Length: 238
Image: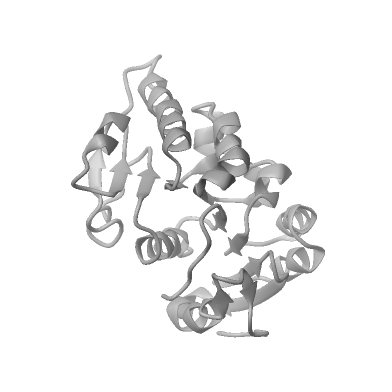
């Protein structure tokens, strides 16, 4: 996949389990960025195999100091009830502080709703998206539904992918990005997806059954140096 995005640009990928969301995020960051930390809160049997190959798995932010690696899978374990979230919350805050101080990182929140609402780091993530942009920090957010996060957070994304859509999803995305994108999302069925590139206000529609074949020529049209889409792309896939 030849997709590139400029440092400081953010990506939001919306899709339910099995839609292709994790596959897309993995390819986007693995093939285009060097300094990456993926914050995950639950196990996936495909971690280290299908996804995040070559990433060093760590349980604490201190592990980011290992200069032998530049790609990390941060998975703080749950504690014992009723304080089961304390360790994850502490590490999430530490991660945000470290990334903001150093700059140039791409940070993936695999389940942003969980990070914002259970671990209480919404303000920190939004700081990375706004103040961190000038530091070259990019935030990649994974969501089940667009209504899971604020309209402000959605508006910060330069690149938005949606694998799910109904009237509520379309309205939320239309208000946060562009009305035509919201309307496109409302047409999605089955394994359809919609991609929105904010600087050029361009929309790509396709089907995740042929995800690579559809996205590679479409996203190759994104000129990272100029920050614009050079080709007009209509309906693809199917």
